[in-house]
Every structure is written in C-alpha cells, then in structure tokens.
Image (cartoon, rainbow, N blue to C red; front, top):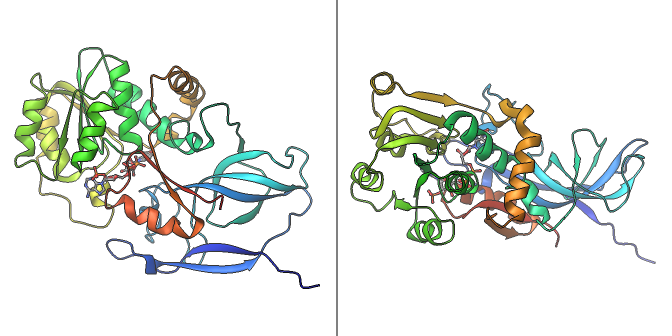
Length: 339
Ligand code: NDP
C-alpha cells in the first residue's frame, strides 16, 4: 500500500524588505508535520490575521516587539484547532487563538493560547473586533481620546480594521464622526453601513485640509490616527483647544518613506493645549476584560458591525499582507486557511 505523506507548509521571512515588501521577501518550504511531545498539542491553522505592524518586525531594528529572524517563520494572530493532544488542559476539537507561526501545522505547549467558542460572533471575530483590533480601538479611544457626546472625532484609516471600530464606537458614544479613507467605495461604506457622519477620500480630495474643515464645522476634538504623514498634518491643522490625539499607527511611514515636512507639532500642541499620546494596545492589558465584555455586548446587540475582508488559502497569506499597503481591505484582513 502506498501511503501519501501530508507535508506541512511553512512561510519564512527570506529577505528583509527594502521599502515596500514584496512576495520575494517570503519563502514557502515544506517539512514533516511535527508530533506533539508530552504536555504539547498539535494545532492546525484555521484563520490568520495579517497586520500592518508585521512590516516593522521585518526590519532588523529594536522596537516594542523583537524583529522576525531571517529564514524563520513569520508569526501573527491565528485561530487554530487542536487536532492531537498530550496536554490535559486541551481536548481534540478545541479552538484556540494566540500568536502563532505561519505554518499549516505546529506544536505548542498551550502557553499564551486562549480557548475560544463560536458563540454566534464567528471565529474570525477573535482576530478582529473581539481581538487585538477591537481592543486597540476601544482602549485607544476611551483611554486617550476620552470622548464626550457632542464632540467631533476624526479617524484616519477609517475603513480599516481598527478605524472602522473606532468610528462606530465614537457614534455609540454620541460623537460626530468623520472618517478619512482611500477609495470612494470605502467612503460610501463608512457613511451608509457604519453610520459615520462624513467621510473623505484622501486620495482624490483636491484640498484635504479644506475637506476636513468643511466636514468638521466645530473643529476637531479627538483625532484617532492610524496613518500619520500628510493626512495627519491636515487633521492637526483643525484641532480645537484641549483636543486629544491618540497615535495608534503610522502606516504611511512603515515602508521607510520620509516623514512629511509637516506641521510644527510642538507649537500646535502648545497653542491648542492639546494632548498627543502614542500607545501600544498592551499598555491597557488591565482594561481588556471589561473592554471585551463591552465589545461583545455591542456586537450581540447589533450596535457594532464586525467588518472583515476574508482571503482564501494558506498560500495567499503573504499577498494578503502586502494588500494592506495598497488599501485592498475593508475592515479586518483575514486569511481563511481551512481549505
Ligand atoms: P487596516 O485594516 O487599517 O489596513 C491598513 C489600511 O491602511 C489600508 O486598508 C489602507 O486604507 C491604509 N493605508 C495603507 N497605506 C497607507 C498610506 N500610505 N497612507 C494612508 N493610509 C494608508 O490596518 P489595522 O486596522 O490593522 O491597523 C491600522 C493602524 O493601527 C496601523 O497603522 C497599525 O499599525 C496600527 N495598529 C496599532 C496598534 C497599537 O497597539 N498601537 C494595534 C493594531 C494596529 P486606505 O484605502 O484608506 O488607504
């Protein structure tokens, strides 16, 4: 009898990208499926989250997370199912989420993994609205933005994973919400499905500063910044006295583009008595249980929409990651690896 050996596909960082990453920076290899030792479990990858911050980890630079090592697997948020277990804390069929490697199969001690249930929200939600994305939006907005009803909140990267949640929470808390995004389709989505008050296409608006002024007749009280660069300069020109600016991300700079010559930020902050604070979501780890409870309740009540772009197939993971930098996703970008 001929037995076919199922091999394990693994995606390695093959080269450190220079500027924009490309498919040639990744390498697929095949190896035997590892077997769990005593105390370990064997996991099969189900859904993979691709995220802009992974680009930073591809540089050989010190940051808040260590860089990926060359010729080693990339790692990101993953939902996986337990297919073999030598660990009493897990049974076959359990579904877990955690930071795992871009491999079809992998062994784990189980440490750092959370067991999850599809209790109506869908498993992908644990990589998005009920995972890092939702926590980033909720904690960054509530802890730094400190929104009050009636205030104006501007969100950049508004149709992306974090931005789409920030804007919806802003509306739930009674703010006037203005989103900035890169296509007319996204602008339409923000206004019609996610209930933003106004949305601006930063790529086609002839005068972004004027468009922001028109969309925010009372000025900007809170700016949730996902992109940095010229978009942020245009928003900062319209902040009100005592404005709060939550610096969540700067995707426009992740490929090494030069920062915009920009505004004299210290003068802007000084003259407006404004607060600008960068953050990493893990700063707010003590707030996570309450945040998840609130996010889950809003999702179940239908008040918060979990918007996702799902790509298909393990082989498509690197391309899905690259697509983030071309704005091809709406909401959270996830790769379905079931088939
Ligand atoms: P998104 O789902 O928002 O995907 C990225 C989006 O960024 C794209 O869809 C694109 O939308 C936009 N974009 C790409 N290139 C540019 C550019 N040059 N200028 C302006 N916009 C651009 O990603 P996430 O929601 O996962 O992340 C959003 C931001 O939040 C990122 O900067 C990320 O690093 C950061 N982040 C920070 C965390 C923290 O702890 N501080 C945690 C999680 C995320 P468009 O079509 O509108 O251009």
